Length: 166
Ligand SMILES: [Zn+2]
Image 1 (cartoon, rainbow, N blue to C red):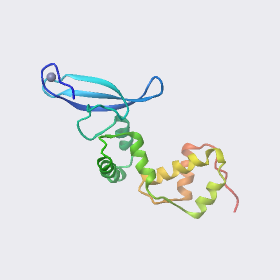
Image 2: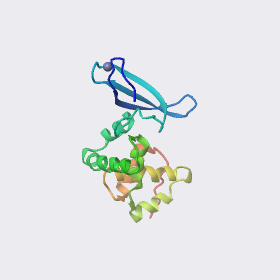
Image 3: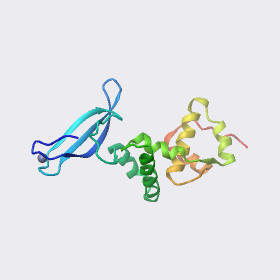
Image 4: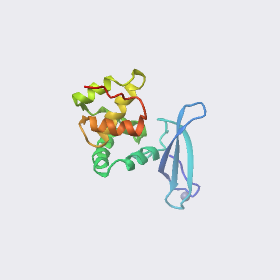
């Protein structure tokens, strides 16, 4: 922890995830003094906050992602992510750890959707699979359907998914 010039402890205000200069990810930890209002930022290597994070915190990026989820999904995801962080003894919820939870859920594939995935060129298939499962999980869906595929295809993959004739 840091001590403010006025003598009080400084509390964590927020965390920003940075791509470091040598592509080493780092965190920009903002600390505030609740007494005099002084705010300071400290750049630390990611996952090594050295005690600067004084409670369970979401990074700005993770919060932003959570905000973009439909409210009914965010309500379900938030406690799950926080519980997992507690179990793992982590104080910081990063964008990555938020998305990881989404993809760890068991997502099933409609057989027609699965068949279409096989028609996706190998170069983008893995990415398409992750993106589809992630999108399904974010919406609280347990199944990747053709309808979802069509939607994601239009949004992320302008090309790539060939529609095989049945
Ligand atoms: Zn102060």
